[in-house]
Amino acid sequence: MSEIVLDIKNLKKSFGQNEVLKDIHMTVASGEVISIIGSSGSGKSTLLRSINLLEQPTSGEILYKGENVLQKGYDLNKYRTHLGMVFQSFNLFNNLDVLENVIVAQTTVLKRQRAEAKQIALENLTAVGMDKFVNAKPSQLSGGQKQRVAIARALSMNPDVLLFDEPTSALDPEMVGEVLKTMQELAESGLTMVIVTHEMAFAREVSDRVIFMDKGVVAESGTPEEIFVNPKEERTKEFLTRFL
Ligand code: ADP
Ligand code: MG
Image (cartoon, rainbow, N blue to C red; front, side, top):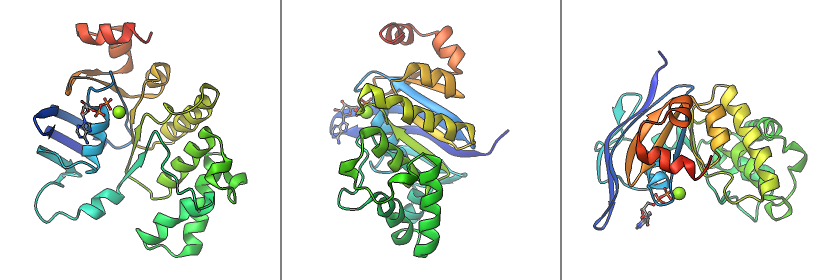
């Protein structure tokens, strides 16, 4: 059994009166690839943002390698460096070229020497097929290329877990495949990944486990086979008929 990297217990998140995450339990084991599916508004982004503390959970526990990161005095900045995030909207720095985009957090946050950061950036840009574009500005790239740079940037921080929030939803259809291919290669390399996606064929092919969220709860979770072929819950079936 692989090490449990994240163990999320009784996680709740409200915005005012609106309880968006109701009582989430979820574990992420080292090397595991988990897809989170569900309708718009079901709380998928809030769950990812709560896991990496872009949102402060209302209650519950997030154990990172057995320690509750929500306890007083825990080093949250350190914790955040262990998790990478890839957003739907890339969030590249438009004034920096590709190489600088991938270097900057390495030198500022991880305090790496520039030469080392550059070497790591080039390795990861090569891995995502973007090494030919080191001097390009984001505005000169397609959406698929920007997202691959964003993935290289996240990888360069050596995260224990890489979180993806609908990484292909903002892309033109012809760009989706290249980003999914990159993500599939990462999954096969053993990276631990949690992926919010509407790409059901991808989720089925690449995931070890699929979580179906509905109205702020984990309505069903299981292997891709269990979720996509033999869903137990009526609401899972109803959701999937809209996609498959
Ligand atoms: P999903 O990613 O599954 O589409 P979200 O997590 O974005 O769902 O949103 C779930 C619910 O939480 C929605 O009703 C949304 O309006 C609400 N919500 C999300 N972020 C905020 C916020 N910052 N402030 C208030 N409500 C929010
Ligand atoms: Mg979302």
